[in-house]
Length: 271
Image 1: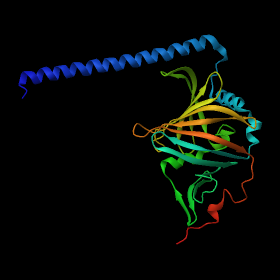
Image 2: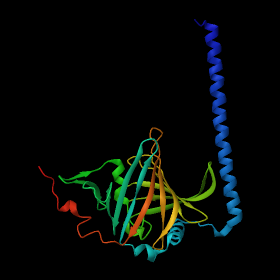
Image 3: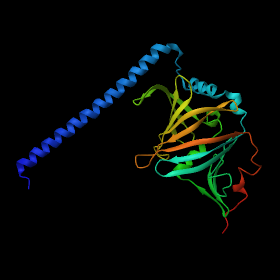
């Protein structure tokens, strides 16, 4: 049994440990911030007036970097096929189809009879027995999926971008343009574009309805004159391992059939 004096000593030692731990965390944060600010300082000294200062400039730079406005608008349909690698949980195949202006169909394989379908306003779960509207947080992002990634004529869509500034991360020496994107439905995302290349590096959803699940993009490759990221890492939370979507095939401007993106209108729910 601990006596009163022992308990006081243990409590004091615990308090000292907490103080030291707090100071260590604070020192680490200060060190990381100094690292980032030093990188930003070096970038400003090197690029000076060449640095972009508005959201419109950053988006225009990105559009040009991946192939240009005309090339992007020439894509009427798009297909990504790959696998969703869930660390420690195995792989899941995934195929996603797009059609201008805002149709999306997502399924496990081209042969799947069940799939998700979005027309930019609603999302349906479609199966041989019928269809049902769904509104899970993880399906809400489908409402914003477009071939142009909402970077072409976005003002006409009611989408706004705000330039936040230059930002870096303590784990890497690169600096990014930080923009904030707001959709008409109130959803908000923070976007980060590589200052050197203009390419989109990451998206952080900040709206509570979408959850904290940042997406990071890597391995851009040329497909039909447009650069597409072939690796997409999604981090959900500390309770779930990251998901790594590895794209194995990209096809553009293929005819998927007249009803491919509208079958939900032809299949009422069976009772």
